[in-house]
Amino acid sequence: MAIKAKHQRLVLLVIALVVLVGAALLAAWALRNQASYFYVPAEITANPPAPSRGVRLGGMVEKGSIKTMPDGVTIAFVVGDGKATVPVVFKGIVPSLFVEGSGVVAEGHMRPDGTFEADNLLAKHDEKYVPREMKDMTGEQARQVVAETK
Image 1 (cartoon, rainbow, N blue to C red):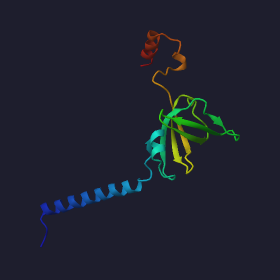
Image 2: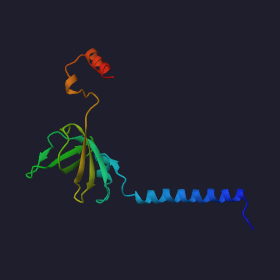
Image 3: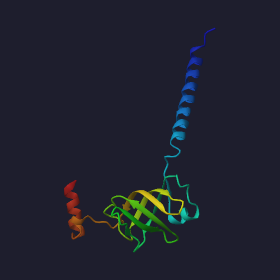
Image 4: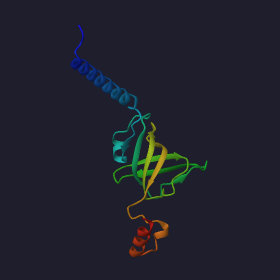
């Protein structure tokens, strides 16, 4: 007995749907450890993640906390959010906007001793940022420069 064409399409649709859901579940399972969660210092000190888990720590670089280690490429600093602080170490080249009192997002993991070991630093500037070339211009001059570049 042959299956009607209407039923064949229905069976193919169900099979395609099952395959699609299976592929989505497989992708989600494969990426479960790749997600990088974002914490502020108060959250990460209250409930620290597992040392092997990759996370992001965001906050302000505390004034007077940036120290360069003797090797010349490792820095230690403290990130705070007004409620808590977290010591951070980073080995590598720091972004040019990375200064005391500025915002920073550090990607890495927590060490068992409570220090955050950063693999990557992202420095943030405030919303009042003005390019060096436009610093001494009036508002009208800046608008004219922007209009000329369009």
